[in-house]
Each structure stands twice: as C-alpha cells, then as structure tokens.
Length: 367
Image (tube, rainbow, N blue to C red; front, side, top):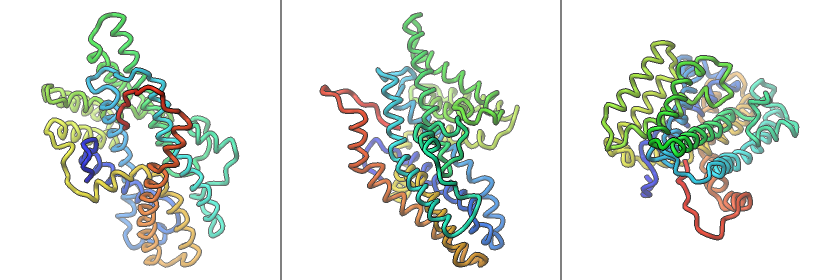
C-alpha cells in the first residue's frame, strides 16, 4: 500500500475489485471466447455478463466522494476558478483516454483481420474520432470505439454538474448572507433526490449526468455527513431516503451505490478509510484501475480474434484464452499507467495545454 497519506486503502480496494469485475464482464459479454467456454461454467459467465457491470456504480460513488473531498470538504465550494477546475478534470481524463482510443482503433483493425464479429467497432471517420475526444459521442449518437467509454464522458458531466451546483449555492449564500456549507449540501441533496426519484427511473436520460447523479451525489453526501463532528444520524437519514427510492422503484444499481456510500461513510467516521484493508496487491490494482479500464477492451478484442482464428470451437482453450486476456489486460494497464497516465509525456502535454502560472497557486487534490 502506498505510504502517502493522500491514498485511501478502502477506496483503492473498491476500485481494484470493481475494475476487475468490469474487465470480466466485458470478457463474458463480448467476443466469441465466452460463447465457446459457456458450456464449462454457464452460471458464472451468465452472472458476469448480466450483473458484473453493476460495479461501475462503485466508481460513480467513489468519484463523488473524492470530488466532495477536493472541491468542497466543508460542504461549500473552495475552488476559486470553477471553469479552470473543469478544464483540468477534462485534461486528466481525456489525455490518457485519447491514447487509449487510438490503441482501440488499432486493436479493432487487427481483430478484423482474423474474424468478423459484432463486438468489433468499425473503422472510425474523423467526426466520430473528434466526438470521442470531445466526450460528445453519446450525445451525438456515434457508435463507441471501445467498451465503457461512455463512462468517461459521464464522469466529466458529473464533475461539472457538481461544481456548477456548488458554485450556484456559493453565489446565493453570498447574495442572501446564508450559510454556504448548508446551502451547498442541500443543493446537491436536491439533485440527488431528483435523480433517484425521477431521472434515474427513465433510461432516456442515460446520456446525461442527472441520470447518474443519484449515485455520484450519494458519494458526495456520504463524505459530508460522515464528518467526525457530525451526528451519525445524518448518515442513517441518507440511507433511509435512498431506501425509500428503492421501495418506490427497486434498482440493483442504486442498492449497490447505497451500500458503497454507507461503507465509505462508516470508514471515514471510524477512521479506517486510509488504513483498511492493508493489502499491497489491492493498492496496486486500485492505482492502475483507470488505465486497466481504458486499455482492457482492445486487448480482449485481439485475444478473442486470435483464439477464434486458431481454435474456434474448443471450450477449454477458449476458457484459457479468457484467462490470458484478463491477465494481459492488467499487464497492459500497468504499463499504460506507468508510461502514459503518469508518464513524463503526459505531464508535458498537460503543461502545454495549460502552462503553469508564474506565481504559486494552491492546487486542489485530484479525484
């Protein structure tokens, strides 16, 4: 586990486990290897195909929790320049994401030489590629160039929506001389209620942040209400409101989001958020989780194509191919994390996109 105090062992563990479930979900859901291997473990592959995708809710809650921690630790926005914060978030997400999209395009081209399958994206045009880089591909109804890229666009939308909500609350508090922290928390809580009781129940909204804000905002609220100086009743009230939304319309994704939010809240109140579980492996996989998420699909696609080309109808060999694809996805993620996500070229590109100011500026902790 990283000795740096900025790392939180509980969050690293959640990210590590969730990223692995997402890789396994895509292996079970896409490509011919899972079809051939299905006879060996039908229940497991069916579960991974249908339910492992719910792990994305963990990332939504964790992202909201960390965003609240860095943007508004006391419930009121402390970022002096909201638009700059959104721009920096865009850079953090999109620079490695764009490299991953190029890898995905290359991987799909390789896969097309060995097989024809619905899981292989078509070669993109310039407009489709630019829409991905600008994170507008869902809104403009372009086909995705890699599995899961919708999440990156939604993450930026959610971050921007949270900042706008907190900024509006701060402005209102200044105008009407109200308590900024209470108004910020109430504003976010109102958006969470709107999402849980209305927008999240209508799949037509699933390309917009408000559809997912129930889970994301739960993470933010869990951070604020779990402050040690607050009464534990606040966390219980938060849970009760979400239970009411589930009674109205049960959604497994929201139930998982609630469980994660309560876990993070309890961990913060109990003082073990930073220290449990003490596992170097989980800490490592948590650190590389975004890189694994970005590059695993082209790796899985190429392995699928190669195994299909060589041994298309042998269940055992296809099952071993799935294991190989899972292992290579993690290896590729580790390399990508070291040399792209955290590498010197990426830092140089960020500096070129937004040069450092001559005077020191206090930086907010990234989420």
